[in-house]
Length: 178
Image 1 (spheres, helix red, strand yellow):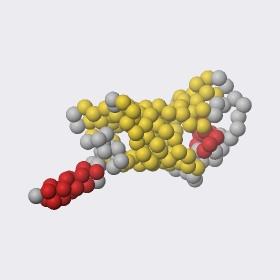
Image 2 (cartoon, rainbow, N blue to C red; image 1 turned 45 degrees about the vertical axis):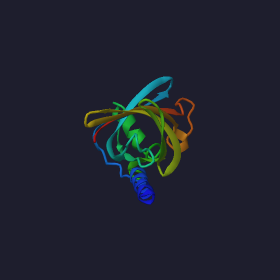
Image 3 (cartoon, rainbow, N blue to C red; image 1 turned 60 degrees about the vertical axis):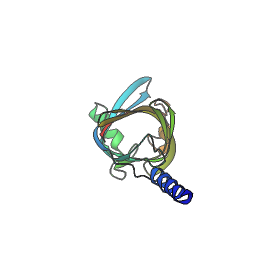
């Protein structure tokens, strides 16, 4: 009887630890960025979000996020600036049509607060970033929301400039159905 109980516990433990995390469908996405240029904050958006999100706050080890946005969708509400940002001096959208983000790990902080370690690739340059976010479930809907900062020159975007900040703040807000 003890052997059967131990076998049952072992099977149950493995089932819990290696349970598949269900893919969530993205129903709404908002990717905003903010950068200072000549001391003035310039805001913009990136669209064309595609992603495979498998997130379970009870199974962070089995969770994963793979996401991308299309670089040719960059919009700062200024056509001339948008064209300049799409050029090879900045995002080179012809050669590098997307920016990708791939999760490495997740950590629960407290309540609905988490951090994720991700590989962020822009223009074929990949760096590891830590992204704090909140995860809130309401019925069959979940929301991921947060903000993080990167250094644009780490990705070869825009070169060195005396008037443009190196710091770029990125806000993300995604809604998924579970």
